[in-house]
Length: 274
Ligand SMILES: [Zn+2]
Image (cartoon, rainbow, N blue to C red; front, side, top):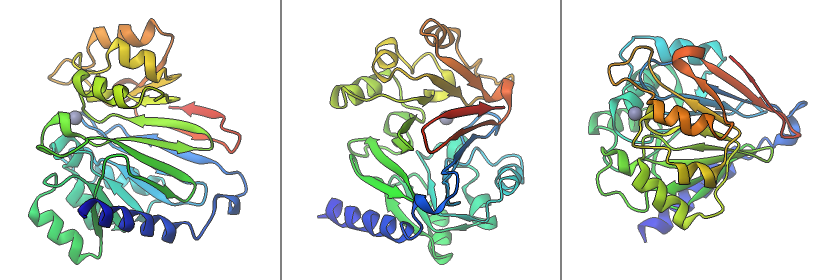
């Protein structure tokens, strides 16, 4: 019953956002920015009509960092904020984002956000929705499908991160958060035709993610590693860099390239600048 209720809520939100269709935009250009937030993840997707989706917030340790980055892209309202899991390098900036932007909807996992944050969000009028396995939504011409976890066992663990596929103008972006090779294997077992054009590399380029078999199935043209410069974990791992390079995958890294900015035009052409 719970899953059915959540499905209905998600579809309702999507319907509300569909008021401005992709055809309203002149160029149909979707903008995507993988922010350099140090050791952490944060990616902004802006639809052709200006709807904003943020996937993770970085750690929030540098006061004003995520706020300034979002403002530099003209963000005032977040139509959707996805928090992939409760680790601070992904969710630590949640409070700052909530304080500085109107956040309409948050999709996360049960237990990923503190009760204080949840209460604050709800007082601000933000809808909190738990991600449901295999659920999909369409937000202003961008479709999202949640392909992991199957169920939440412990949302603070990397193996229970939200993994989502975003599709816009016929191009797919795969956001793997911090899942490891065991979860990747289960994901491709249940999604054998999973493929993407852009892969947000799992767990900041850790050797425990982004297996050979996973890369062979998803077969991205581009990969982005969101990782802090001179981070204490020594990431990204050389083995991951080799797995990517031997397949000819074009790699961008936030520790080297800074914010990684890309666009997908209405014909599906991807342009990347950094
Ligand atoms: Zn992480």
